[in-house]
Length: 520
Image (cartoon, rainbow, N blue to C red):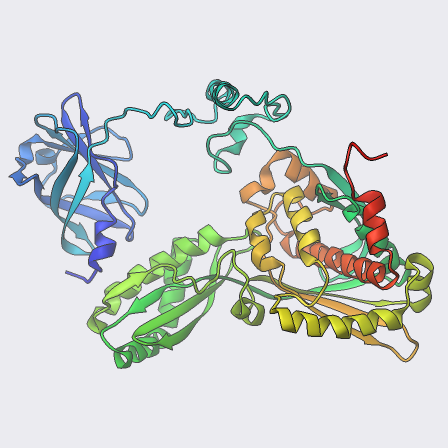
């Protein structure tokens, strides 16, 4: 038998699948290991009772059940990665409560496998306080209206606005569960942003979805300064998306030897990743040794998708191959993610090694332009930047600029990005320098900007319209979008820094950023 960690093998059992049906009992297995073929079910034991094979039927992904005894000797049942294999047993119903299941089976390429689990019988009864859902189509109009009634009855909210969808709810499958309505966020437009990038070339009007007053106006002013100063140069200088498995061994020396083995077999690991998903490319695998653990970072490119799910699938396939091929090392345990990719968390390693797109935006702000448009001096901005660097160092902030997260969040909401990625995308490295003419060279490096123009929420109607506004909808546009985001961030850095230096920051927010219906 090829080695599979016991904890990983037990996860093939689909917890919560144990149910009584009209003919007896059923439960299911989900292939979370690797593409396989079921050769035989060797033994099933429920609560100490060995099940007669003649009473067992098998079905794959909801297909017609096949009696186990009808499977010809030597034949196999395909069991693809992610597929659900249901075992139905003709026997008396189980009582409510927890039951023990022992399963022994043979599968290619793993050989003989066995595990035991305990699972509680699923009764199908719903908690009256649970949110209504439909197992058949949870995005149909009827179940959405049922949830809306449920919310009105339970909370007293009228849902006058939230219940009004302007699109077919069916298109949100894969984007949201328990769909009940929409959250309408105000959308403003700033621009034109003049970009001289490798992918984004020209003037762009940028959609910003926000509830923060002064935000759109501030970015608009920064874009005006950039335009009058000759535009912003942008370049994507790095592209990595990670998954970070960890492998545990008996001792540190074995861990080191395993790391050496990974390096020697990198070409084969790349092939396995490509076979699992043709849209991802494994660039390299970093490893870091601590105690008896090998922490790895699998670095991929993912095309126009953000790619977290894609790299998870590819890395999982690679790790299953590694576990089989490197069984002599005696892996004690394995986890697909060790928290070392720092998904949706700011981290120093992502600032250094890149996660998503690493983008630089730079502009030389003309001294007279800044004075005329923002009533600020380039010398004062440069001095403020030096002082603010000390403040950033003292605070341990992940960004020595002003507010990169504002532009990134507003654009993410508008264009259907995963907004939680702002946690890492907000990291930034600001640099300023006065030229001999007293103009201000200013640049922002975004080391972990995670954006997409396909997949996720980018295909929803409003978000697709916002992407199309910038010519960034569809395949082949992700680098262009990354450059526009970086240029917009830089516009905000210029505008806010100037407002702070000219003492207009508070007065501007007081005039444009308050939403108090009681004020005069």
